[in-house]
Length: 147
Image 1 (tube, rainbow, N blue to C red):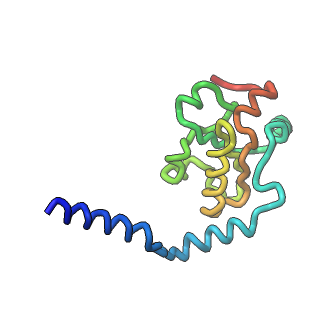
Image 2: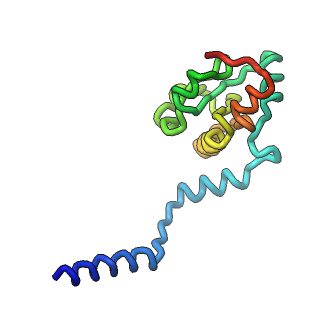
Image 3: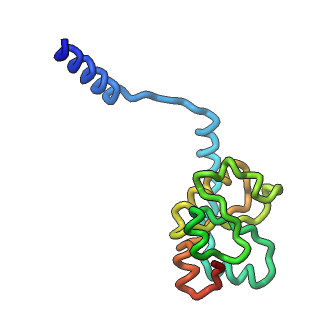
């Protein structure tokens, strides 16, 4: 009996991994296609120096820091708003109401920021960029940090 049970479980596992399951999610597929085909030449990124220059010029930029709260507390760009990447969709009310507002997404190295930028773009935000090299690049260049 035990042997039959082991064989049955093994068969389910083998069949489950051998037969690909095709899930069609037209809305998600279309969002991905739209996002990828509309990528600008700069891939939605901004360097720390370019961001600093635009902030110094008084440009209104919403800074979205998607790091965890303890990372944010260790140092962040002045006026940045902390919304961890894992809670971004649940906290869209913390973002500007205008979908065309300039938003720069920041994280530690730019990976989570890229995910956030992609997600916001797919949700209809049209002027979102991630800061390349993240806070590491910002700090390396000696730009101001709030703790």
